[in-house]
Image 1 (cartoon, rainbow, N blue to C red):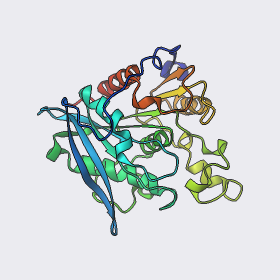
Image 2: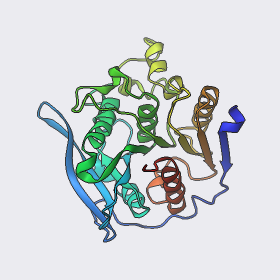
Image 3: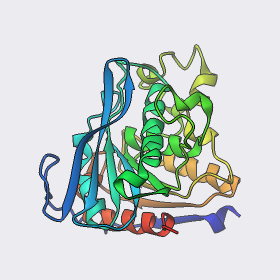
Image 4: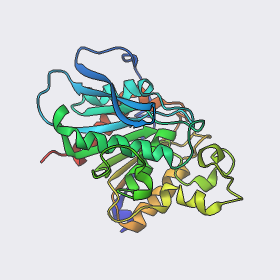
Length: 288
């Protein structure tokens, strides 16, 4: 079962060689329409917003992909994921680059609450923006990759829904892409303390619970993991651990291992990676 479900590809430099400058996060390419600063959740006086990207002048109902920026435990600024969101819109997908709270504002599971609030908001407001509520995916790199994957493997868990709007709406995802993502947090016993609010030594069960590897099931959404074999920040073995968990659960997973790109956010401007990611989402987010 595991070998049937697990597809491992060594790309041998094919993806990381195709890096090209694209429009910056504040530019609006002519082939893309962008609706900026849409509020998807409000906590008291604080709000979180998203930018919605669509192929220009497209009137059809589209699948939508939530794009979650990298950046460790700082406040996630939506503009930083503009290049990746633009790339997906160029390839026929709607995409929503979202904000999320940082460690100075809240601890686990607040960041997951934010992602799920965005999912619910997009699903609840799908008709207003010509989106398919049954075709929602998520993608992120590094810390954003963790958030995307964790949200994907914990659908409709009350503890993770938070106090956002549309609480009667599902937060499930139909496909997820995680790039250079930390997925078994016990392997990072010091660096993750800011995120969890407790040390691994004082509460190892919390660290296990916060690890995406512990929540897989046969109903977990199709998952594409991309990791660099030269990454010394988040070793590619993190993706292999997740693949094992998915394989044991009987869920669908693909892995692409890159040889030399390290942990830099190559996913923002890598054209061949964008092609691969878009193909994955089009395959799994088919509108009925």
